Length: 382
Image (cartoon, rainbow, N blue to C red):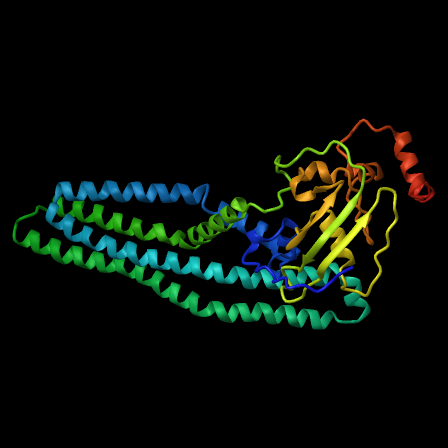
């Protein structure tokens, strides 16, 4: 029986401190947010490849080449014009940084609105039965409008920097003409030296300006790469694909909960299980009865090792399930949820979904359907 104790709850500090299933319990990791993340971030990352990456390499190569040519032919005018190029590049770099920050902030807002839209669409029958379509549309539009209002200052500031980077190229022209004219007037440079040097440097400066015309794509790609790397590098404490743990060849089915305490990461202030101790013998039927939220589903989730207890242990045949190989352990479990999910494909595919064996005969599948009392229903389908 559950009992009170002096147990102190553990602090959930980050997504890496929770189980893999717990990762999807967090509001920012709902279906809409993750779908939006995977679709948009991959698109942003691809924006830096292909023609964009080729243009960046071409611009960088051209800039280096014209600077060398300009300084070699007329080093005085070349150095003066070259001195203005860092200013142009720095202005474009500032815009690049600002767009990256803008994308980082906008992503959270767009994920929230996408998650709300996904939730409303998945529950469209409920929305339609309650005639709440207009309310859903208004709330979704309000979230989009709020994001639009937040983005205006960033758009204005980045646009000013972009305009400055483009305007500086004309200032470079003016400076080059003025200084080059003085060199020609003093007969230090010939007209040929002036034209070649000035044209090369100015063209290079304009090329440097075009590099950061790709700043939106580069900013989005940089942020997308960082977010995807963070996702790929994440190592959940409960790793389904891990080969660690004691091998499980046979399970008799004796289940034991030893002084188990647990709370969900999304509700850290609510303790669901408080010192649960329970023993179930092989072949024994056990019913968990109680009010909604008392921990019935939590017991099953802990038995499946979707989560780990904060304190205490869950044992199978005397072995703590945290010490067992997770994939092998779960292969001995079968969970029939209250609302089972059917995946695209044949009925055979759905029946065999819980096994890795492909050599199961149709007779065994039909017998399993009869045992589950769904065979007649299946045969009545078109």
